[in-house]
Image 1 (cartoon, rainbow, N blue to C red):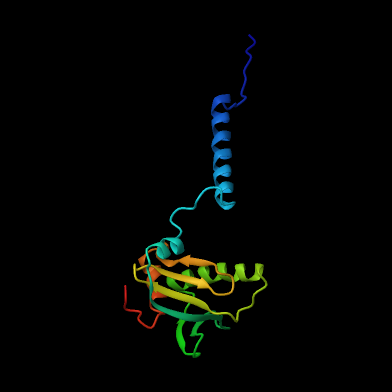
Image 2: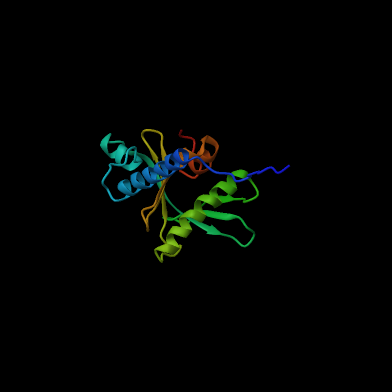
Length: 161
């Protein structure tokens, strides 16, 4: 007895075509948005400007890695120590991750560690960190209330929410 047995796994043509169309549509929309053909929605800086939302408090900060693995956060205007972040804590890991991304952006623009970062609490309750050298902005509320609080405490009015 002879049996022809086929173990070939194939994806049905319509499913493959649908997947390809979805990938191409996503790439097309991302490209159109990047090139300005499609308006970006919910850009925090634009939304705040349109709603005339002002800053409640802003502080210029510098973040410096220390030999013991901590990060020294200092006020860029007067050199005062704002915080010493221990990397062994969850909040310290968050600060390290945010600052690693900012440092990578600075390296891409050939910018050193000297320019400060602007930490701003806005009237609408949002909290942003902007690199004054590259203009990269991070909305810290997007990472949850605990992570937001770590940066909020770095402001002079750290008890504001």
